[in-house]
Each structure stands twice: as C-alpha cells, then as structure tokens.
Length: 393
Image (cartoon, rainbow, N blue to C red):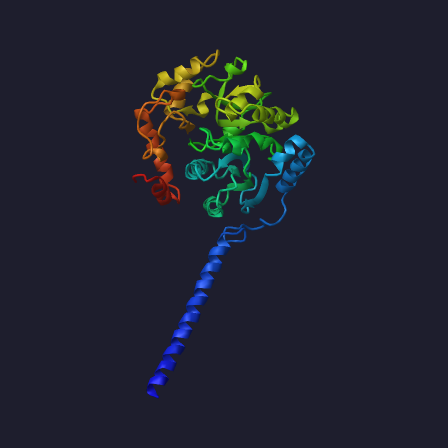
C-alpha cells in the first residue's frame, strides 16, 4: 500500500513537470515563430497603416501595368513592408539609397549599410534604404536588417521589395543576377533620384552632399572606369564609360524619356554583354552620363600615380589634381573594386596577381581590408561574419 501511494505521488509530480515543460516549450516556440513574422518584436508603430509612400508606389506600378512589356517584371515585384520609426526630427532631409541583396552578399551589405549610417549626420539626414532582395533571402535575415532600425531610430527608414526570381538566367555567371534589379528602379520606386551602392562600398561621410549634386540633363552620374573595353565593341566610342558600383540615378528623367524600354530591350536581346548591366547602363544613357567629382570617392589605389592613370586616360578634360590628392588621402567613400581576394573571401582565394579586368592584389589591399574589418567589428553581427567567412579576429 505504501509503495502504491508513493508511486501515485511520484506519477503526479512527473505529470505536473511534463505539463509545465510542454507549456514552456510551446511558449518558446510561439515567441520564436512570432519573431519570424511581420507581427514580431521588430514590427514598428503604424507599419500596418497605409502611407503616402505606399500610395505613390501603387500608383506608379498601376501606371505601368498596362505596358505589356513591363508587366511581366512588375508581377514579380512586391513591396512587403514599409518600415519606419516615429521621427523625432521630421524636418530631416532624406537621402534615398538602393541596396541589392541576396544570401551570397548579405554580410558585406550589412557592413556597407552600417558604414553609411554610422557616418550620416543624425540631426540633419534621414537615410531611406530601398532593399531589393531575391526571394531566397530568409525572413531571419530580413529581421536582422530591420534590427538596424532599433540602432538608428531617428534617421533611418527601410523599405523592402521582394524581387522574386527576376533575371534568373544570369545566375551562375561572373556577375550576380541581383545586380540587374536597379535597372527596374524607375518603374516602382517613386522618388526623384536615388543613390546606388555596391555591397563592397564603405562610406566615410554624410551622403547628403553627394545626393544633392546637380544632375543637370544627365540620367546618371558615376566614377570613370577604364579597366574594361567599355562599349566600343557595340559600335559606341564612349569617353564616359562609368563603373556601376557607385551611382546617382535620375529616376524622374529616366521615366520622362521612358529609357526603361531601351534598358529592358538590351537585356532581352543581348545575353553576352561584357560587364552585363554596367554596359547596359552606359550604352542606353550615353551621352547623358555625368562624372562624379573625384572628391566623392576613389577606387583602392596604391599611389597618386594610379589616380592619374585612371583619370588622365579616361577623359579629355581638366583635372583638379589637388582635389584628387585630397580624395586619395581622405576619401569620401571607398569601392573595393581592385582588390582580389576581398577581405571576406581571403580564406577561399589565393593571394595572387590577376590580369583579368585589371584586378590585382596589392599590398594596399591589406590596409583597406583592415578598414573593412573595423566596420564589420562595429556591427552587431561581427561574430556571425567571422564564423561565416572563417576569418581571423
């Protein structure tokens, strides 16, 4: 009898523990699931309310849905959220930036975005990031991006666009198909102009000055690039061939002259373009292409001689050499276009000279890689970056 009572009491205790643990497990699972949704802890006040921006976005998409040539692209683009925090400084001037994202370049993009936000004037500039992402980008990574809104609550807005699987026929080539997303920006981003930055760009100063440059009658502004054959093989002698890694894009003028037709026509009919979307940009917008002043950025050069080589052989115009030297000493931004391997690939590629497209590993790349690591270290994802790329701290 005693043994039976003991077993009965023991069974009751076990049952209570089992129920409690099951409840606790279900609670944790519910919280974890909630964080993965738009109704999670990273959902911001008033996000569900329709905004003026969303109205403009819908109006722009509706306008082009009757264009059969564009409709196939528009069907894949979906504005999944318009995240913003309550602005303490609503009079801040807005700087709109495009960032193309997929799983492959997620962490370099995080470092690039963080450099922009760290060096923006928080009392003067609101950065509006338009995140154009591939459908494979996980909800977990989208929430990691949203976490930046908690770190920069007064001067950051983020707008997310699911771009589906657009331009998928370029998958597996040297250039990622995600780079093509920016070509569609005029038909669904309802702003006057926008800055585009590659994922291997670090920004060291506030972007408002660059954003406010006078575009005049140019469709686009960029940095000169003589490390490729440009568009000569297409029958166009261009002395203004620009690199597409840093751009100031005149969306209004592109819409006005409907240049997106030429862009998409070239894409559909030229599958073997050198430098792919970069060549499309240069060919379609020529001759209305402007050159960004050198003060706003340079490539990672070894010496002043490299700067002279880039500019003197690229364009027939007077160069302000004092400005070039200043840009070299105190760059506004840095595009890691000439370093190979890049810091996040340093454990997967051999350190060697490469002649293709002028890409050469130089001693100076070590310095620039150190700068990149410093910016990575100042993100909340540094441990993940180190683990993912197997880098040394």
